[in-house]
Length: 432
Ligand code: S3P
Image 1: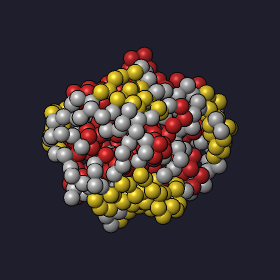
Image 2 (image 1 turned 45 degrees about the vertical axis):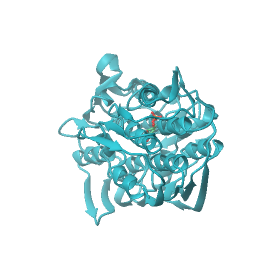
Image 3 (image 1 turned 90 degrees about the vertical axis):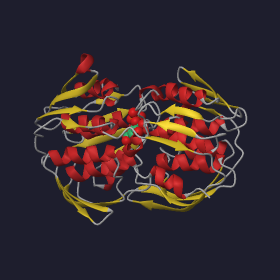
């Protein structure tokens, strides 16, 4: 559990410098999982050492996977193949991490042993029926609180058959849970989704040697796959870079270079949104790391305009809407976010949280059932807000504070350790 610290952030006159954001959270989880299920040794560099990914790492260590630290930036994971995990001796604590709980549900549903997954007060409120139900269609025996909808989850693993599932939500966690169960059973499992969600599982499973077919409406795997240990280089997290992209745009006299950021098209919606708003963001030095596209991002202060955001752009920027609402508060005109009801079931209800925090400081922001409407140009005043224990709300409000009229006090900021342990340090480093 993180500490309940409070921070006060003052307005900035300009932001300058080069930043290396920490490793991508989604890719880091998958690197740990797939390396553990592969045969032989994997070397992973650039892994995010945030609390969420450490929950995943501890879970696999509790199932007998040996992990060795090599220097400051490399982990060696000794994979034991699909049949190498041991029954954990205790409950697995996923902390705040939805990715750990949902992807592990898929992995563990196919393992021939008993396991229990729990999490913190926030994760235990989030919907798990979205993985329990389709895994149940494969024959999985998973019980949970609230009529099999919430954690803790008790999994009596094994005996699965393949399936074909049409997911009602564009969720990479749902898609991945099914692919990870499906890859362990004989036959073909297919997942269809309404819009393409992030495809890191498909890319990395392929990188580890599995055959996974991606097609317009979903993905397909034929089990049982054989994964081979690999060297993995984790790119910087675009969802972490997003805070500095918006900061660089809204604070006058700013120029920031964000090095080595993942720009996978299923994740790069924030770049499209901010460019459509008139933001100056250049993609430099584009290249590929372990099957994922990366670039350095150069961002310069810009005058922003409001836009309408919806449809396929939403899953491509799903974690960035708190900070998009901050950009919108400092843009001219109205920004509307729709088709984003998923924001209500993230680490917190992010529609309610941003309307509360930004609204309390004078921004004109209204909730919609499936998003929000922000009318830019109202000054954001000094004051105090609460993060609601959500890392991305805390960091978004820190970005808003950089362009506010006075200091903003943010309560409960320790949660930033879930995805971005050195956020406050980097924020201090770039002030000119
Ligand atoms: C993630 C998928 C997304 C995202 C989350 C990480 C993943 O969640 O919001 O932060 O790593 O697969 P959903 O699958 O619920 O959309």
